[in-house]
Image 1 (tube, rainbow, N blue to C red):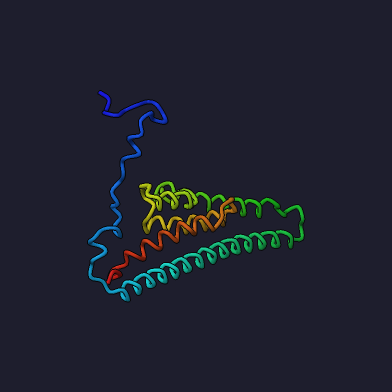
Image 2 (cartoon, rainbow, N blue to C red):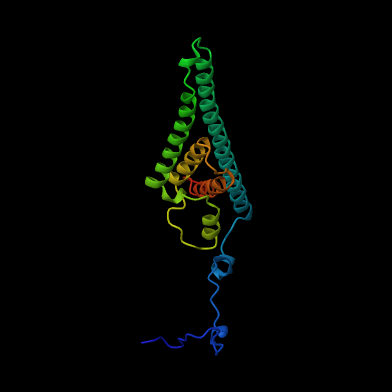
Length: 195
C-alpha cells in the first residue's frame, strides 16, 4: 500500500510540499534558551578557553608530526649513507654490494607503510582517508561512525607520519584538519571543562 501523497513524478504536479514548514528545533531559537539565567562573561571565557585549548592541542599535534617525519627520514637516510660509504671504503671493489643501501631504503619504506596500513585497517578504520570530506560531512550532520576518538587521533598522527616516512604520496594538511577536529572535540570533553 502506497502512502498518501506518493508519486513517481518529479517535479510533483501539486505543490503541497511547499506549504510544509519544519519546526525550528535549534536550541538558540527556543524560549528556554533565550530566557535562561546566564553569565555572559563566564560563557565568553569558556568559548575563548575552548578555542585556545583546541589551538594549542592542534599546534602540538602538528609539531610532533613534523618532528617525527623529519626524524624518521633522517634516520633512514643516515643509515643508508653509512651503508653506501662503508661499502665504498673497501679495498676490493668486487666485494661492494650496491644493493644493500637500496634494500635498506625500500625495506624500511615498506615496513613503515605496512605498519601504517595495519594500524588503520585493524585498529582505527575512521582514520582511513584524508579527513576533510568526512569532516565536512560530519559538520553538515552526516552520522559518520568512528570519526572521533583517541584511537583515531593516535592512528591518524602516527600512521600519517609513517606514511610520509615511507615516501608515500600523502600530505599533512588533510590529516592535520582531521586531527584538529578530533582535538577540538576531545578538548570540549576534558574532565571538568564545562565549569
